[in-house]
Length: 381
Ligand SMILES: Cc1cc2nc3c(=O)[nH]c(=O)nc-3n(C[C@H](O)[C@H](O)[C@H](O)COP(=O)(O)OP(=O)(O)OC[C@H]3O[C@@H](n4cnc5c(N)ncnc54)[C@H](O)[C@@H]3O)c2cc1C
Image (tube, rainbow, N blue to C red; front, side, top):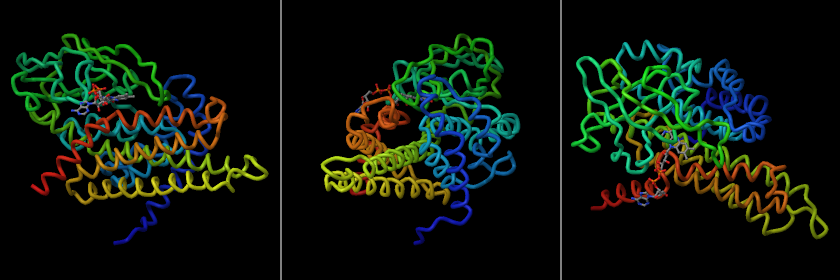
């Protein structure tokens, strides 16, 4: 067992850290207030090769793997959870085309998605079905060489900003999860439109919208994978997504801890810095232990994926644990900042609003605890 990262990974971490410190972090507050996607940063990420990390060279990728992808998200989240979320959602939609797409689909879509020239979005959730994803009611009905899609998708990250949408709908309403299929829908396709933009609590530098399908007619070649394979495709994509959301938690918690520690060293109370008070030292200690444990869970899940092994349970554990760690670090970080922590003049309240998403999106913590619990109990049946 070797806990060291390779030189390539350490170098990549340094590259993304510098990029984040120079190009991302200074704009996080502004993004939060603007409630909009920072296109200039997205373009710079594309130029820096950040989008291309987990994909093979054949499609313009860097072929650096999932561990490098997790480190990328962690480092971006250290400067902005919003920017990290935009990339996470982009990969969530791009990866299924990469893994399940036909050669024709890969050649058509991957070069622009792998480079980050175009953004992608992954649409499973609906107004009436989130955790219970098999309960979606949007449909696709076959019409010769075409499919006609109808329905509404809710809470879609990169909605409106993306050019390419991976959308899961029911192709057979009688078959539950096995009746779901996945389609690629391009922005501008007749019958496909962007609905309401969400005015979110956090991660406001990422865009989230409804998507509307109104007799949207797609050629049969738009289907990704086989008919009825959509739920499986979504679950495979979400394993990777959950490891990445875990990485967002690590980056957010790290940033909260660093800011709280610097503040504690400067702020004076009772004749000395807060840092001299044991209660404050314990808070920092708990943050650091949580962050380190979460980081190893995330890296392990990503490493398993790179080894081609099953990692659904490990990805769920990484996400749930890192989300808890991030929420605690932000809450305790605010506590160390005292009244200043409660002010928008300081970043901690924004981090707390951002971190809350980690307990909800891509599998809420309650639902993932069910996944972890049932999977563990089966091992001892
Ligand atoms: C900012 C943001 C971005 C998002 N981006 C995307 C995206 O890009 N694509 C996409 O498809 N979706 C996206 N989502 C949707 C997200 O995945 C869902 O919100 C999430 O899966 C939860 O579904 P829900 O909101 O319908 O909550 P519900 O399923 O209604 O759950 C409500 C509460 O009940 C709990 N609960 C539900 N069932 C159980 C159970 N059996 N046992 C115990 N507790 C339970 C849940 O944990 C939750 O706390 C996004 C959401 C947000 C907030």
